Length: 121
Image (cartoon, rainbow, N blue to C red):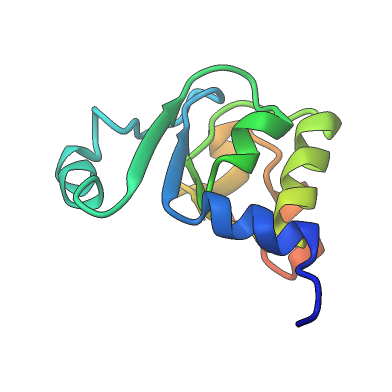
């Protein structure tokens, strides 16, 4: 049997957790705007609400990382953490509000454009 790559193991270990980031002034929070969704998800997933700055440790817990309409700018370090997470097989779910990046005062397009996606105004 071929050895399993370290990233494959990491993805399997985190695959049952959904982390909702709430550190960037998100428009929707897990307990305010996503209550019904939270109830349904927690029957089969470990659902985590994260309010502190993004770190490698936080992101590594997530099978799915949710950015629900961030309204503050990300640092290059935070983008590096998210980029590595996605490149290693993590799932990133980004929501945006009407008016896009400009209205939300965020810079999420810097990351999304690397993957051929952008939030329009």
